[in-house]
Length: 249
Ligand SMILES: [Mg+2]
Image 1 (cartoon, protein in one colour):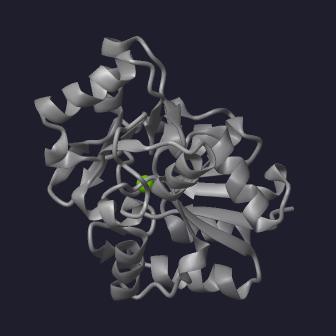
Image 2 (cartoon, rainbow, N blue to C red):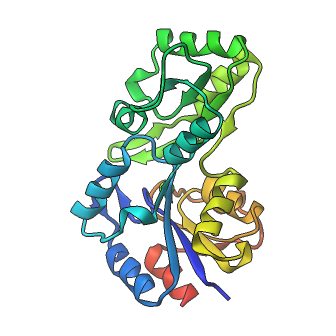
């Protein structure tokens, strides 16, 4: 029996600033059914406050405390390990890290830095890694669906640093098991009572199933025909969020 739902945002509820048709109604219905919900995203292009405003402007009424972002997971890791980050993150995200000490950095944080992925910035990160600094990341997603087409995400840049410094990143967003287990704990459920709905076969669905959850891939956002071949056999498949919701209720 399903007691909790984790919903991906980009590609599942919206693409860019456009809500996917039926998504608002599906979220409202899930909220009315009394299911425990969390909205989980690796997005590292927006601060939590910006993310909330964007969802609000598209007509989604989602309390901020139900948002679980990968940058928030990275932040709590830095705090609990008393690390001072060298930040390779999107300019919008700096406000979420502004109050952390950043002088004399002893950790590297990689998110979707977009045009901030310059040679100089990557090389400074590489040098810290060579000195033994841990490499933390908001995700390792290869690409995402932007409004004008597919776009490189954090993964390719993270892999470049891992390769050069011969190290392995600690990934704190989807598909890390730690991220899914933190979300399941926030729902007050057992993993098998929770279904993850998302448009990324690897990060959302294979990741959730590996962590003991159930998963449904939606054919919106970044989905491309053939992605179902990346899914474990127990995964579900739905045309969109509305169809996924109906298969649960
Ligand atoms: Mg997505």
